[in-house]
Image 1 (cartoon, helix red, strand yellow):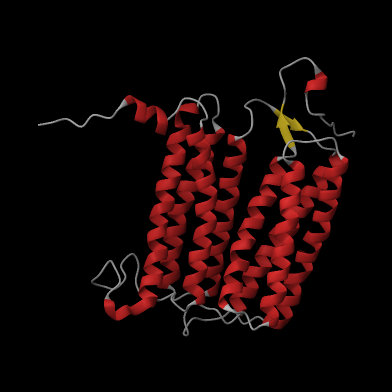
Image 2 (image 1 turned 135 degrees about the vertical axis):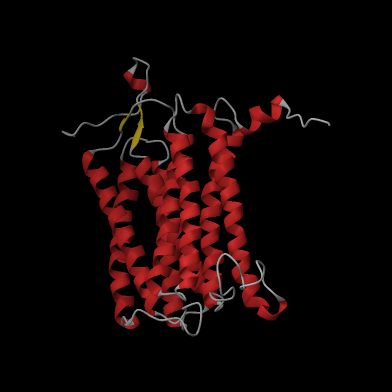
Length: 322
């Protein structure tokens, strides 16, 4: 019998001993795919396809895939399930791309493993969501897990681009505090948005329950932390412009402001036009994109301690007294 031989060059490409272009590509794909599945999951809900495949992991009691009788809703729901397999493959390749770095960059295999494990957990939660006929609490948890996975994937990506070694704060203490307060505001905005979605009309199925909250009132509640986030982001952007140049900080705070401006515009537009499907889906995707950029800003607060003794070659470090 012929033996299957794997070329050594292929192993070095998939499992390199250093961080390569392939590794960074996998890092970007890990973030992009975890954001993208929020869009397809949103499409499932917004088209009323949440029960398109009425069982899990099968579509029907007798068929793993949708049957012609299930129509477009079955295809949409099954398509979203299938994309989970793509995420698992991407997470596995990302993990393999850093596994040989575990001795020197232990955080990279750990972070990529957490994303892969979280995707499996997310698939199980998705199955429970179907079993419970799209209960709004489980649907909200499903979305929240996606946001957490996007955050972890973003940490993985930013660490890929950072030098190894001890890290220290490179911004004043007040700026770090303002950034963490902004992160809290983003978190509250996303959580309240999930509650608001559980009260709205897009349940994923006509028979799905709602959480009973007043959607008009909770629209206003949702806007309060959103505008607080916007105001705090302005502080971060202005502060980044006035601070000594810190790698990535101006870029990420500027992008954070840009995402928020678009998100606010889409939010106001959808609220005044009866929550059209396209705008709601964009709003959902932008929310997890906002989480990703916010994490990138937080990761920019620290940098690796430069080994060179020439302090002028290093980014300025700040002590707690600064």
